[in-house]
Image 1 (cartoon, rainbow, N blue to C red):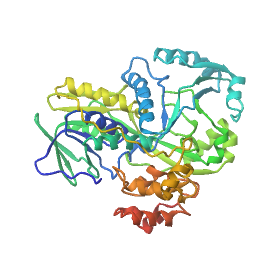
Image 2 (cartoon, rainbow, N blue to C red):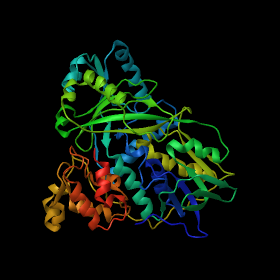
Image 3 (cartoon, rainbow, N blue to C red):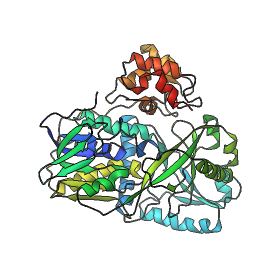
Image 4 (cartoon, helix red, strand yellow):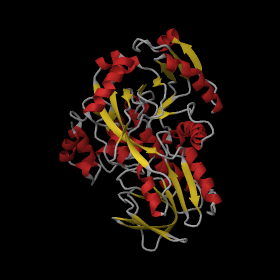
Length: 480
């Protein structure tokens, strides 16, 4: 599959701007109706912005603000995405979580958090004492006074989730436009024209799911109703050898600035420490910082000192949209045929499918006729890159049928030649090395591609990739 090219005179029924997890979920939902849908993004791959760099937790919604649209959609999205993951093979591991109180003030807050969870419809939390906390998490640092268990909290692969939504949308007929940054919009009651550096895209309806750029695009339609600030979250990823220290998510008592620094296993077998929460002015600043590292190490030393004795495999930073609007902002302008999906914070991964369904209701009430299709293809079966599930290199039956699945190329992550081949033959193949990493985990291990870089480059070249990931020079550029 190649990114779509706009044909002269083509007018889409709906253009969804933003191919992150939320925009892709919306495109998937709307492509289930008799509509011509376009999914537009400025980057060269789906899920290459905020959606690729987060804590990848599937939230129960226990701590949402009761009565808000966000709390409602997170709770609904948790169940929708959990079921969808079973259907498509998105790796999910229900590890559970412990909210740890380290001060008397935090300990006193636990009953209120339990009551809030119950108001949100989640009744499985339990308050435990200090001894019970250490029974569950013996590697914690000293000083934990008590905790609140949340057994439904899970870890998920955010990369595969976005890719699954976009893949199903494309298979349902959605036109995927990549490298199409929307610079301006000509709006009329009948038609909107999206101006991009690579041509115009015309649509009768526009859905703004651009994440960090949502408030800027909203102004193209004459609004000034919410403002976004990029909030950088830096994280440290520890080697798989640290996995025995952490078998569930360790959450802090949340504050007004966010959920704070957590320790969590990842779906790939690593352990994650973070994130920071630093408000910036530059919406493209995703570099890590020395101050961020120092902050995380200080926090980690108090939370779990043993973790700091393990090796750090990688560090990264993601930007999430901090909004001055107190809730999700999902509204339709029927006259301009425009829907804004703004202020979708870090909970957007969990709520994505519920947002898609909600947007379809909003746009239908605003005047778009939705007629369900009867010819939908089966849901895609996504490749498993989760460590707790059967990987191709472990599957003797699969290897017997195709020896390429027994040919390990990336030894840190046990990625095979067959998986790399499949990635380039998929509905939405990678356009660069980052895309290949998100689809296979190749070069994501402790050596970060030092040993497997040449072998991966050879395989990429064999697949006929014409993108920047095909050259050894590019591979050298991404190495630490």
